[in-house]
Length: 271
Image 1 (cartoon, rainbow, N blue to C red):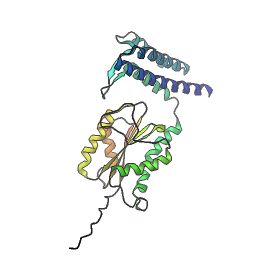
Image 2 (image 1 turned 180 degrees about the vertical axis):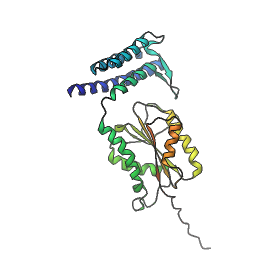
Image 3 (image 1 turned 120 degrees about the vertical axis):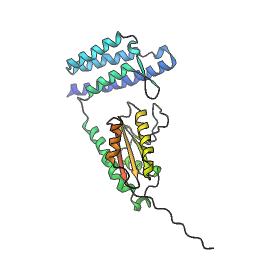
Image 4 (image 1 turned 30 degrees about the horizontal axis):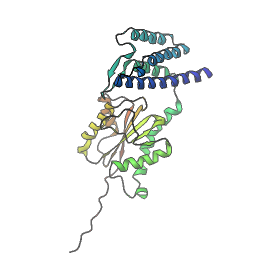
């Protein structure tokens, strides 16, 4: 048990080291400051990865990691090889590979509580539908995206105290500002308000643009809450669209079916 805890701590430490190496890499690439040159940090991450694989007795995986390490060291760009991401920013190829190996090692230590809460948030949001449309609480049903956002966020805050309203991202993406962030379950939430069938293509384009434009090691899950005033498009169809468009399984759409907001009646003025 003690060894398991030590390895889990080593994995968490390595995560922090990789993030630090990535920060150094980006600063060095943008400024050319030799003080920020990250090869030493990246190599240290590789060595820590090898040590964890050896401690777990995963000889074949350790061989794969060592082969990768040797090939990187002998390659043209060495530990400083880079690739341009979809946002136009340069990323370390090597740290990305280290991260992939680390994810494989981390799968040996599933955190049941973390997984349970992540699954629960989907059900919480589905159940929220009955609250945010309760006229005894809000007098009216949601009439726009902001209504949906604030009502859902107010409830989620009770379950997830670390919830952030309009969280700032370490890597900014043009036209992408998530509505809600929950750091404890590494989840970003966006809200969409669908009142006309004709708006479906526009909202679909917005969702696909967001999911393709942002990747992060701080946020690993993305939820799109689509509040529709009539039954326009089933939840399974939205998620099928995501999968067919190549969006990863960590992105999910949740559809809440409401009703059209009632128009305020205007009293006829007597002449």
